[in-house]
Amino acid sequence: MTSLTEAHDRLAKAVARLERATAQGQPVADDAEAEIAALRERCVALEGRSEEASRRLDAAIKRLRTLLDA
Picture 1 (cartoon, rainbow, N blue to C red):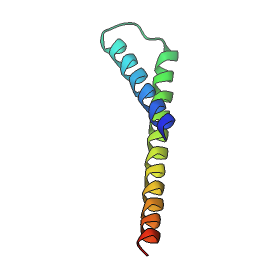
Picture 2 (cartoon, rainbow, N blue to C red; picture 1 turned 135 degrees about the vertical axis):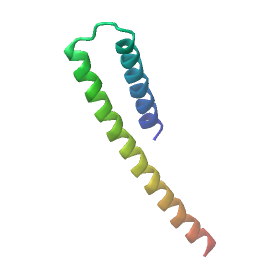
Picture 3 (cartoon, rainbow, N blue to C red; picture 1 turned 90 degrees about the vertical axis):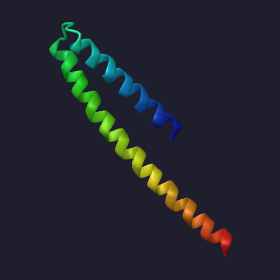
Picture 4 (cartoon, one colour; picture 1 turned 180 degrees about the vertical axis):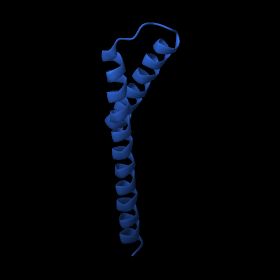
């Protein structure tokens, strides 16, 4: 989970840097715009995986607590 979170953070920072560069009027090639779009898609996918992992961990913890309380 930590590596997924770290990858998500790096991706978000890279997208933010690219967006700042474009907002400052620096020329951005079509390749960079395509990369931004790809990074956004990957970010969404990673967020989904992170949420799913969190739900599954919560369910596992709940089951363990139920077993320990029995």
